[in-house]
Length: 427
Image (cartoon, rainbow, N blue to C red):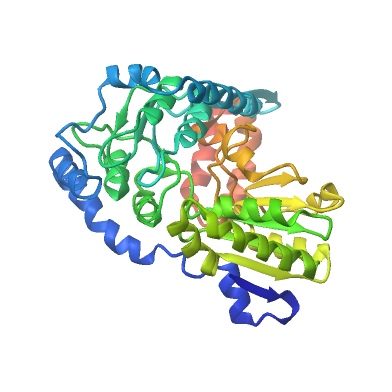
């Protein structure tokens, strides 16, 4: 654990905290590039070899049979299916309100408007390995379906080369019939460029580790991506009225995701910081994912004492956290000053884990400060805007003078000439 007094932090210490020192994809990009090239050149054959090597894939099938996807709900506990159904409905209710509308209007020069077109085919990456991220399936697929996406292809390494029934059941709940048991950079390459078994997609969404993030960066000129959703992070703004145990519990919940996860408490109360540190240490001793949380907490559990809550919000806006929890006496006043955050949880009972699963907001969020310039996953991520215009003869005559003046100022005579020709034709 690391503890600082904000006013006494060195430039190096502040930079290390803000930049999430140690969370970098530079080395991962070196590893990801040859994998992407292999899949691009070798198709299914290369993908199969890589899946066997890295994902421990059993057999030679690069797609889960549809009948296994459809029957997965019968092999999953009814209680889990019920929880998934409630979560899906709440995610749907929230995202259905994200309405981007077409429009059209006329003025003296003609008609202008925009069409809103859903992407036809997208890829969803669902992390695997040490956990079964069923919630990620819902978070990515529900808004895609609401947007009107026709085809969704899921790639996930699963566990030991086999996709868990819970993942398949969540996919079936979202009407997804295409699941591929591959992960890592090889999955991103297959989705971006296509193979015999996995057709190319228009966009890839979903979180992943450093190798997945690096691969998304490398393919983004050929296939659209959402953003880099790296190791999980939480920042808590709290005062002396907050509960140390509740804060510690939320910090631990994010630390258990990944050894590189970050959990930051910013408070104007020295006593709250000390009590929360003590509570977190006790929880770490009993944590189930002990091998993950203790590594993460060593450098990722960070405590920053500030002079007041305004300084806390300034720190938070500079940090731009993935998750922001506000546990103060008047949390809405603090929230009013927040400009940069992936998702905000206002008030003592608004645990981040509710947003992870079932409030309805999306948990696929930008990390490492990207929340200062990007939003989390929304319905809008699956839509394209096509503007259009139809200029009348009279409009061409009126607009050509404007075009000619600006085009000549830019040194683009052909632009000016194209406008002049319309003026002559309309004269």
